[in-house]
Image (cartoon, rainbow, N blue to C red; front, top):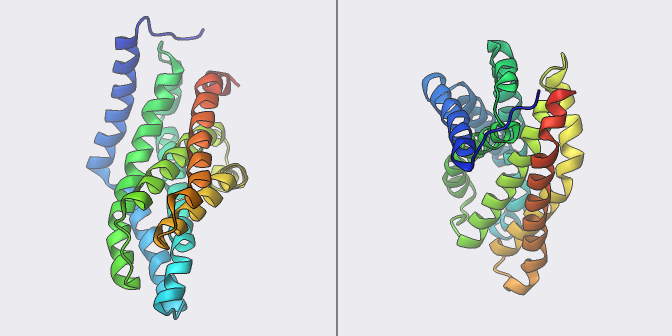
Length: 231
């Protein structure tokens, strides 16, 4: 039987409960953020020691290195987030609760978005020091926010689909990366444009693609999440 909240206040209470549950659980365990940070820092350090770059070349590759780091760290976070729910036996409880299932989706998505943003907030200054790049530019930060939102929106949807699979750690990246490829391309292009101080008109197409991608997949997830749970 489909669970539906009777009003917007009830809907947002459920959303906030799922969101706060994930944040509180991570605050006590620090497993998810710790894994994402260690992995992301290792990737940054490997790139730093393997690439001998002059300042001009460093600027050209920064966008790609950043988004490779964010994408792989984000995938690790998605896997561990849903795996933890499954291992604790709370995933089935969430799905059986008499609430609108999309509220569960949005609560999980926003929590994962926070985890990604926290990881990125630590990675950016580390990268700035190692590569001598100023990454704290409003345009670049906007791209990171839009890219992370889209990544979390798609990632939680697919992580839910694969949560019950025995090979979820392998299956999620196989499903996820082809779907988020347009997002990553747009994010890299827009990030590179801001880092190279290109005119906004040259970057606007990629920004528009990020915004449209986010809106489409959030809307799709809202419509199909309950069907995915019932399969």
